[in-house]
Length: 373
Length: 248
Image (cartoon, rainbow over all chains, first blue to last red; front, side):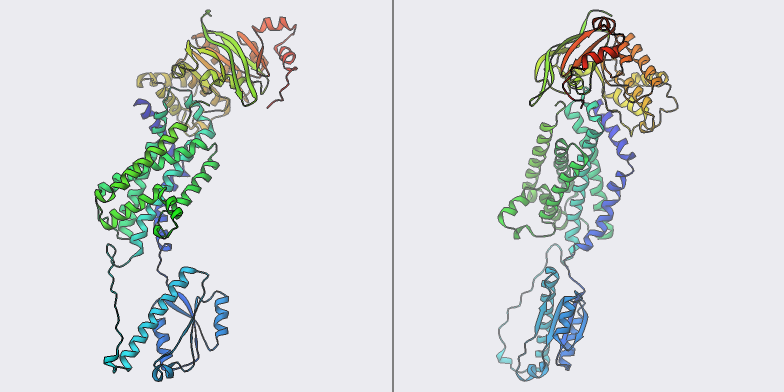
């Protein structure tokens, strides 16, 4: 116990003295949590549209004003020729072309039918897909409006229509931030925890101080606890600041579920994560190596954790990889507890799996950490 | 000096693949003596020392340190030895005082002992003004003296010094040897490697290691007689000339 006290004292002194590390622990995550959710927003706005109007009629003007007033589109170009609109796409000034053919109004009124042409710049897949879909919706709505206004007759001839009304549970306004912020917070805690822990131990290897420690009667478990406890506390702290200061005050996210449950899970998650950091440090000889290996894992964790994309859309083998990452489970748990208010029985399996990760990673690390060579 | 043996090795060997870094070395070190462990760069001194400290497991052979077995009782050995590596290895981002208290603390000194020890140590080293400064800001010579003092803080039976005076000026070297003598006077056995042959003369007994084997072991005077050399320098050249291994 006394040995551990001395180890912890030393560790905290070193952490608080490290002028390069402190902002990385306490400032950077907060700034990231303020900025990243803005980028991780799936709502696409400001889609640049080029409209080729061959008709110049009241109807075509109405349609254009409907599109531009929707708030999603920005009129990049209004012209008479498809070629000039296409030039806009080629020079990346425009994402979509809507071509309104000559006789648009006439055909719509007389023939009761008219085709429009939409060309989409699919370089940015998300923007193109959503932009096309938005535009389709606007045109459909416009079509329905016209029919209501101009052709009220035909009461008996209306085609049967199934209207689907969906309601979004747990996040009624489909606010992406509610969904992203807790997930991003998890990734930030993961980065701080895994990097700091791995780098800290490897730094002692580089400086040679670990050799000095290895000739003392310090036990393996004491040394490892002395390294884990400080970063466990820092992880708790970063998560709390993110949850109570940034998420609550800036994004207005108040956890629906039990905080005790959330912190219970966080504490096990941190043990698992620090175990990973520890494991990396037992393999790496230099901070550069540790950094590269940690970066590799964080990258996979981040992109495969279901943070940005749904896990269900992955091929089976990729899904299995995603399920081998502790981050995946913690993101699920955070979203379930914070947004949905899930209780212990809902995340029981998650607890079991995370305890498994903690035991496995730490076990491997302790087994691989040698006081002798 | 008594004839109690504190280090006893028997055909101690360390192999790294095909390379035999230390080849069946057998020697004894007696309590309270200053034992010089000499050899050219790459002769296997550091490897041998790491095995004796429990940092490295031998490939074969036996050894006892302070009466404890080098394989089975490593933790017991660690309580009874001090070690100062080639590389300076105190914490640069802790102060002088904090380093003393940290290492004292993990060797199990009580608060009272810690306080007394650190005061006494700082006074002996004349570091009253530097006690609260970060170790990183000290000149190398002071760091080495501090590292030695920290290594014997817990009054070990044996202290291992791996080229403790590398890179320091002659005055500091002299002061360093004063510290070594005073530790030896208190009964601490000194096991030291060095490349300075004048330092070899300060040792009670000296061993010469060439290509992983001990080629000679005796008092400096006897060695000089044996090789009919006028100084330890000549003894070293005589022995190291036959070395096959290139330095480093």
